Length: 211
Image (cartoon, rainbow, N blue to C red; front, top):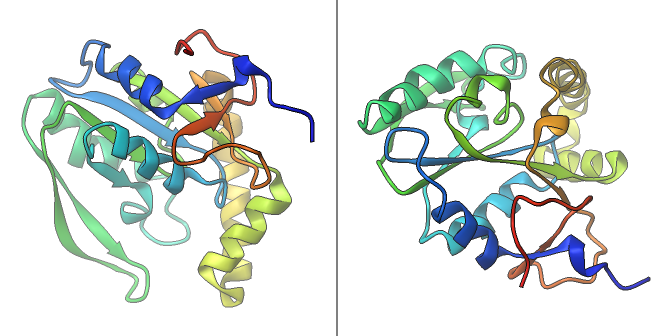
């Protein structure tokens, strides 16, 4: 494998510095979104970035979807439960969906913090544009992403995952989520990189400087 280009390598620490040096746009909060298809590595990326952002809280979109048909309506819940309070400088709170019981089951607090990460399919939709600091898109080969998602959810969910994938295709085509991203991150599993410290871009960006 050819060495990765220097302009495609970004340290999580540098990305965190860039985010923290940006003015807050959501009340006192800097909003970071991590979007992409199911199985593209969004949660892992968000968790690593959170660690470099003083354990920034994370809102997982799969807590907000109302089941396997819930992508279309998730934006209104994200706004009402999380974004609206935060832009008024108040803590947010959201219900957590129980995928086994097919019902929301409990409230979870979203504290006021310097940074909030929202990760999951639909996190970077146009709804967040007035308040977002950084939009990240997790880019992965469709076959690898599908295998990851199936391994996570189990073979019994293959039909649901297929239907979910169709929702994602329609949603991303309408929202142009990838095209609007500030960073497109290559999440292929075979990249020669220290994944805890560094991420690899699918294309260069001026949004974050590299040391």
